[in-house]
Image (cartoon, rainbow, N blue to C red):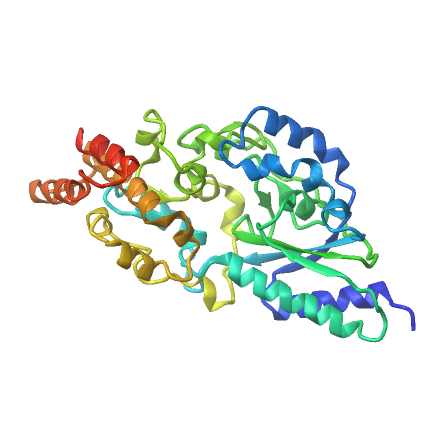
Length: 366
């Protein structure tokens, strides 16, 4: 019997929802109209040290070149707010940022590494497709991706109706805001493309206005070199001194553009325990985190996306945050607290790593 694309897609969507995905859709493979913007972004060097962005060039916009034979791309969206997230979570997170001595990790990174979660579940979804088509398609080809290959994920997501591109460049969904992960399965079977949705940002510029480092240089255009997420995660060297005070107490990632977005009042919690907050990644004081040994760092970040930046980059980030806390007029630290924070920094003042030493010395110079 021939394959019925409509029934196949219905099966994929039903299975996807059972696996914890919020939405399953289908994107076209012709992304040629996105190529000029990609090239312009790369030419401006807005990708910074993310050489892999340039290394694959236009292959990112050409799914059929990345995986020959691809004629459809299944897009998947998965909510990641922890299951116990309060209704007023945005206010709670702003409160953390207004407490200079708290070490703040981006919400998405507080649970299990999303790469592992999505990779596993996309693999299960791909297997379900293969099982469904057993005996129907001898040459079936599937390949799953999630932020791990040269794929224009946000472009595929928007073209398949998962949402629209917000002015912060992230995908926004009317029913879920932007607090979700994206993944894809490249498929060599033709499926009907899902309808895209219209954008609903209007005249709102909240995300642009709130960005601490002014990394959003135009609607939908981000200069990664100024983005706190890039600086704390992707950037390996010295953080530009003029940007350090703007980083506040953010030690891994930055959520400001999402916290201020009106659409995120509709953000949905995950139904998976994987994204529940792990012990030690929320509510920690900078003085405590500065005391973590490398072994403790590895233990606290086991299975977390944070581990990939390594202990040295982590120390660099925490040192900057501690320096900002010492400089802050709102730190509410007692004289003893100030001394304790300086002493915690002093422990690393003669660190063997020059990058750590530089940032610690900057922090202590306040």
